[in-house]
Length: 497
Ligand code: NAP
Ligand code: MG
Image (cartoon, rainbow, N blue to C red):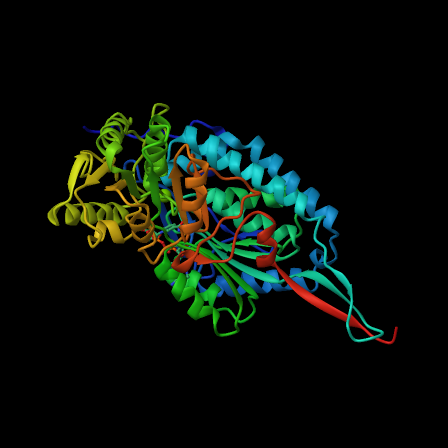
């Protein structure tokens, strides 16, 4: 099995965008890095260079934070009324929609995902997210109450936190930018955003549209660069009031440490090792399709991927047989190929990590019913893989692989299953497949996970909060809950009444 060379961009704006070095957005201007340094971003389907991008470091972060600080403290943003913030976000959503093809192609080229998926999921999800958050800008309120102390009343105000540093990963580059920017801007904060080094392009295109939509200068600053330099400078910056991060649990811990200097607010969306549970009484066809999509979507590079599949004993062979067929039939191709159902992994580093972990699992005694290794040819393609004969102590069962690899095990007893499903430091998400609603709710109550999908998987909605228990994170993005991440509550107490 070998894949063909990656088709190039077809969209005129995407071609134009890739034709020159991309600069960073600071204080409403597109500028080079202070050092003049640039770095390359690559197409993971063939390893070719797509573009050079300005490389932000501490000095650039300082400039961006100063611009965001000024826009928050003195600039027009502080006095921009909620309905204007709402209209700006809605306008941005319309501009993203109008440039859907450009975004989809750039995302596909930079990340490797299927262009069709990028358009249907990432771009459409971004539009929807900005529109939902546009609605929230005008709906932030507090409480009023009579106090027990005679002659006193209290009220609360929700105010913007201030300058928000936002650091995002490479798996959903545009959508993660939207999840971060949408609520921050709706609540009246200013932002310094650092995209992942592997996928800076769509965040930078979004920066162009943010300017076009009419956001005042300095409200959104976008500084591409590396985690150890730009990311570390942002998370440790004394003038940043809040840091929001999505990525690995390991780096999440570093962010918390860096944030402790000025005790900036921290919200984290981290890794996962989600159990996806199929009971005998489930619609097994739907459950198998859900199990396949749950792990193979986005090449398995999804923090909430259903990477541990538990199937009730009687149905195990059937479900694994059908899942194996589904995996072997996925069309592996560059994301820009319209027939692509699975693209490459993001990078050589991720390719080595997934390849190494699966090899380790096989050595430890696991068996691959399909896949189990890389695809021949250029690019970082890895075969969709189903591992059975695992045991709970194996690294492939315990650690996040972040690739198209599911470990599957049969179960008998529901109490044992709950214990096993929760036997992980992670707690981001879980799936349950059954036609018995009582059983579904009983199981949902037992699972320590921020999201539980019942008879569905990977379903997102801007109204549905998302975030992790345990080491999968702190805070909830989306839904009304995200307001807690981007506002401070001021309690005002009035006496003498
Ligand atoms: P990562 O290192 O956690 O990267 C996420 C973001 O954090 C990137 O923007 C990265 O910048 C930045 N960063 C890295 N080190 C930093 C530091 N010391 N201070 C501040 N920011 C820093 O993730 P990765 O290396 O790309 O992937 C490694 C593993 O993380 C994956 O295999 C997967 O298990 C997990 N992961 C999880 C998610 C998720 O959605 N939960 C997403 C991606 C990866 P650079 O890109 O410039 O290094
Ligand atoms: Mg790239």
